[in-house]
Image 1: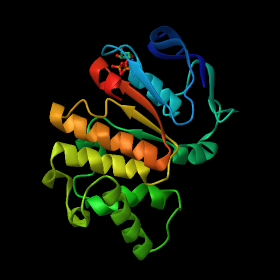
Image 2: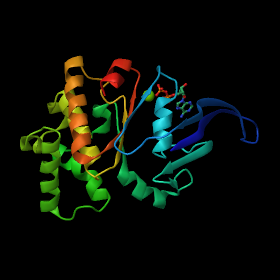
Image 3: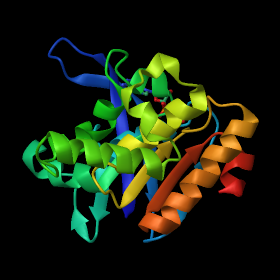
Image 4: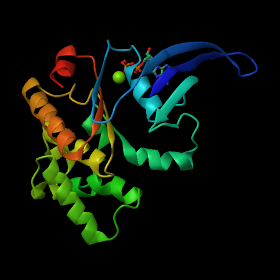
Length: 217
Ligand code: ADP
Ligand code: MG
């Protein structure tokens, strides 16, 4: 539940370091996302969509307003308290090349979040989970040993989706997640997302500048 949220970035400061002017990237926004829903957020480039997703993930702090998750205020949580939240809400980035370390094997990259959140223990469990995640996004076990540059754009985006699922999240924030893909590949990834949503009972905040893509979802 996003209520009257604003996120302003200071762009000018006075002699004492106090901000004197702001970019009002997000200004007084309110909306609710219900369980099991795909909430589409559409708008032209630069209108503040990514700022909303970052604010919701608490990668940015809102200037004012309230953000609630399952009824609980999250806009004032500290880093420690945010850890649990970051397990439940995962961000899927637009650019899978930037999101993946070039020298890290796919199999290791996708289970990293499970590992960070202490959800798996030991090499065997890690491997098993990686194979499970690869299968969920329609990639065979052979991809475990691949590196990002060996994959196509669509395959890389599947890897990024697999990694976002590693913590068993409840809400995926998909910020222009198919914008970098060809139309035909876009459709495949969108279908995959909808299948995963049903199978894993996810909710989506689906952000795009492309009205057709949002309508499709
Ligand atoms: P969108 O995702 O809809 O394209 P963004 O949320 O990325 O839009 O950006 C909204 C506006 O806020 C833009 O004018 C952008 O230049 C500005 N902006 C984004 N991040 C920052 C920042 N860290 N500092 C200053 N201005 C920013
Ligand atoms: Mg954006």
